[in-house]
Length: 266
Image (cartoon, rainbow, N blue to C red):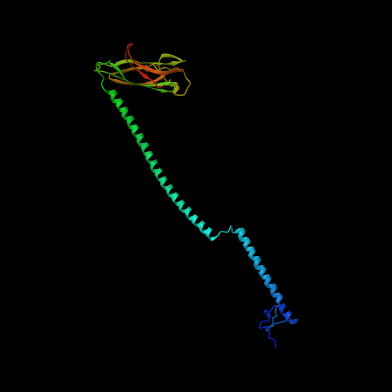
């Protein structure tokens, strides 16, 4: 008596038809595979496995990058660690150098500030010394009026002057006189001497109008003092005249009481 399968629905219909057609079946009623079919099935499975392996290797070579050995991988890792250590060492050295540069830069800035302060202090002391030197009483045996200091400075086409006048002894009255300026220089390649006139600005020009020059009634070079007087002003330099030196004179009643010459830098 043949054994029926417990679950006929699970047996493929093709196998059931083969069994019904008189094919060889096993004890369970399933058809028995032919040896050739088994060989063909095994070959197909082997061919599929080989094909899948080849495709996998091809894909890995194509997308997985070059293949390296374990020794090469270890060497690359060691080289990577060495580069990391070198980078950290260089970063430390760079930080040290930047720190030293910052310290040197701060020291340089401080030195420059100290130098500027020292130069300013020296300039102030020099000015104070010159001021007190000018205030030292003159020898009574010297001329009654003396030019203690005279400074001239170029300002475009003008010469700016500052003159300090002092009287020696115990003057009983005021001194009334006048300053005169004469310059030695070169004009058109020829050495010459000229007398300067004071530079005056018209009142109309201060308002911006192109009005004619109006000369002031008072003499800008007149001086009047008892003990000392500081005179300041500007002198008009003729066009084309190069000033080399300027002589300042103090005149009283047509008599020169004192004079001083100032050389100007070229």
